[in-house]
Length: 360
Ligand SMILES: *Cc1c(COP(=O)(O)O)cnc(C)c1O
Image: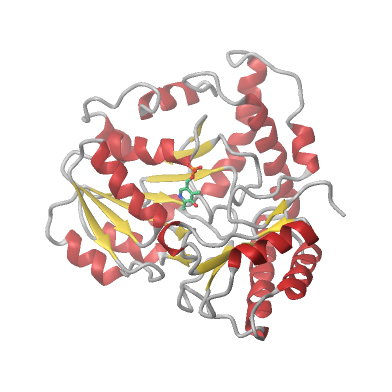
């Protein structure tokens, strides 16, 4: 049995021993040539995963730092926050706390954002920025990113900011091809690293907008990142240990093969779905709009989820998640992100079968 409780919650997730090992390398100065070389080695791999020719920036913060930074750097008129769950709803709150004019395109939790609704909002001409969470980690919904990005393209001077925190590296992201202006992700979800690092890229037209925005601050000023990235540096001292971990994970991703990685996640996701079907457990997200990185199930039988998770923890040394935000207790979530394999998901399913409190 493991010496620790393994997390199958949708973030933070289990970090492999080899990743921790990679993070124990000696410190280097963040203004040294060695640091620049480390960043330079990672850059093409990051650009390939982002689907961009733009530089990918390293932010020593969790994803929220960059989510806040994006609206702060880019909104001049009004931001439209597409809201469909805990993370996307919160972005509206964050916009307002930054003193920005903001509106919601709100759908019921569990439902996706759909192109026609977005088009109708943008047709008012009120907005210059749209925020979208690709994979709404609370509800398990994967929004139709390509279709939504195409809608934003129909409107001049509307910038699109996309959070791919829990979808990044589980499905392809094509920033340049889709015309995405800011693409951002964090490390503690699908990249299977400890928390504390966010990655993002900004389109040229978004940089042009930012140049005209006042009070961008310092720590998250897009121009500080751009200026430093030209020399493969960061504005302030970054989380160097995490960057060692990131290089290690990037090498693993490209050794496995990116397509192979997507296929692995699809396979593992299907294994979890097959388990649920066996027990006649319902999905929270509608078919066609389900995440490949995790699954949110509806607790229609009103099971005692906390008691279930306690058994999983005590008897099997693993944990799943029993709902987030206002759907806590009404849903439960299982992650298949990161370094999981058919073997480890089979082990999870065995534990779920052994403890499942439902009738089936
Ligand atoms: C986890 C998550 C976040 C927040 O990430 P932090 O690292 O806690 O800042 C934002 N968006 C989505 C979709 C997430 O899953």
